[in-house]
Image 1: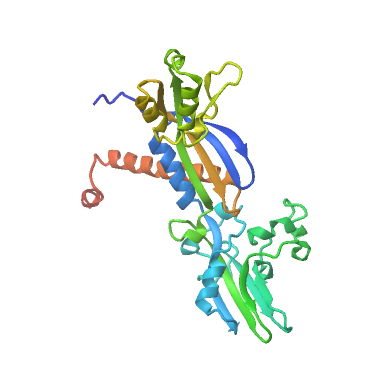
Image 2: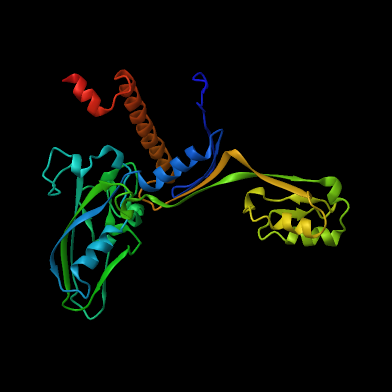
Length: 328
């Protein structure tokens, strides 16, 4: 193999649509390995904050302690500064009891039903000791998102995520510790509701062959596609591509053309260096931040591989054991 060959590529990203919880973008001039690596990192390795430890002092509800702890863990929490926090296992400032500003956030909940009406205990009842980390459904309680001191949970018009229902005399008191984690360890830490990508399709219609079809045949051929990929121009009666990205690589229009005795009527193939990503966030972090954090995590992984390769080359390709023996 020619050692002078370079496989370095410079991917380009173009954002098509972006909201807080949704992002659609094009990633070009790269290959499927990089696209899939980016997708997997977004799902499993971008850190967020989630409740990991629950200490229940009073629970007379119909749900047992483990059930409530599990439900609390699945409540998404705002995690904009998760990248700056420490993992609890790596924190040298605490003993893991949760009372640490560097690796954990403490929540408390106290609810008791004193009436004949059922009391819904929701995420709105969780009291956080860090105003930057709250259940995502309470984000609207911020009158100014850039000012954490303006948090007013009482002003929110949302009921919150249901935890448990209490009847008269029932009570729930607990302390919960939220920690930084990644989806690879538990799904509760995944910031992604869904992340998908598809090859960008390229469609070529054989115009000369298409002209040999009657309007009825064109209509039947267009309707053979399960999705609205093609259409017929009402003025020219020409078959046109309406939405190429709606194509699902089902080959139905190709099979229809062959059954009509017109093989080669259309050619559809995927651009192997162009991908369309759809990113949806749980709300723990914005979709755009999820993408940026994933790129940072991926860069850190690649840097670690590069440093490992450099250290191996400096040791003449020896294994770690060989290096140890040489050093002695």
